[in-house]
Image (cartoon, rainbow, N blue to C red; front, top):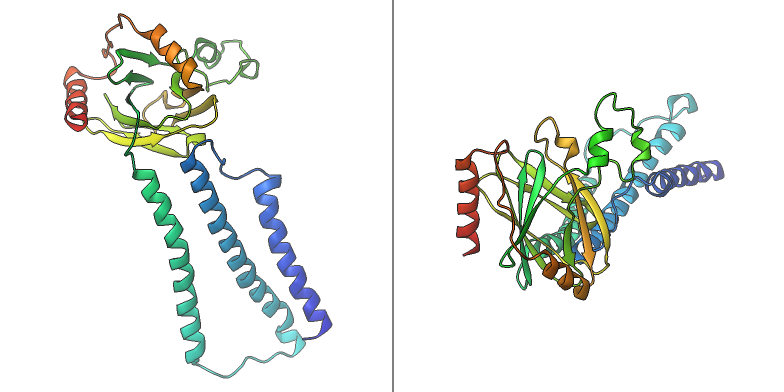
Length: 292
């Protein structure tokens, strides 16, 4: 290959790699690594698959651009006169199969990890309503409604005169946070009392639909105490964008103290305006049958 051609190939490959790195790091357009075992596994899998795709893209588009530039008609290039190549056809069939199998093995392992709720230490029932969440610590006698906090709710109103930028965690703060202990495997039981919602906190590494009359399972085990924010990820009505989720993770001793403080007479959940009594009863019946 001529020196000029080698330079063109190298520049094409470097341009492809530079574009990929810029997109992931300079722009910051990448998924979070998260704070759970599953979220880290999902992130690592994502990066492996992404770099495989980057390498394939650089090779394929690099070959295309090099061929277009170096073998154009104005340079006197002539197309090869052949119509069939068994070796080429075998190669471009076998190589993609090997790549896909290599990608499927770690992906399957992560999917199995995602669905395995065995060994959980705590159950929390999550019920979605338009437009708030109801949390119940199963067997603990603790439950409460979590809604958009008053500061965000006031600032979101048209002509309120409040600058949303002046509100801390605008549209991502609630009046009652979901509090969970660190280093504890927790199973979530998700359902809804009216329409389909979706419970999503990116740092946990998953999201689950909350469907009326159906109970979905998910789990998490957070090792790092802190506050993690998310939102409803299913278009559930006009106030869908005002249905945040805030999870506060405490060390076990602090969580146990918080739980003791929360225990006591709990107000019954008022579902008027959120769901018909029949819908709420159906969701509770489905949950009871699933847990038992």
